[in-house]
Image: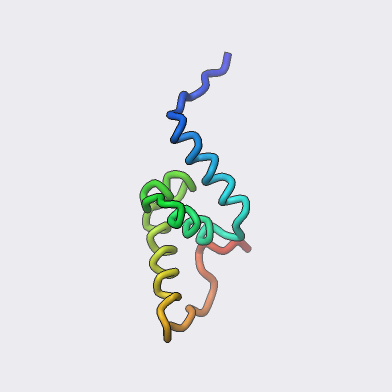
Length: 83
């Protein structure tokens, strides 16, 4: 008989939301931004997506920087893009 982890209903909804967002976005950075817009904190986003908090924080900071007028986009491939 398999043992199923019992989750708090809100936690389970958050995990399902993260899965849905990840499936609907092109890359991890977009998923991070969508979860941030939904009100999740950096640590929680990292936990939900199975990544480091630093990765989530970098994606959020890059997004903020890109929105500032006069800021040029970085050249090269970022680590969150898929091949």
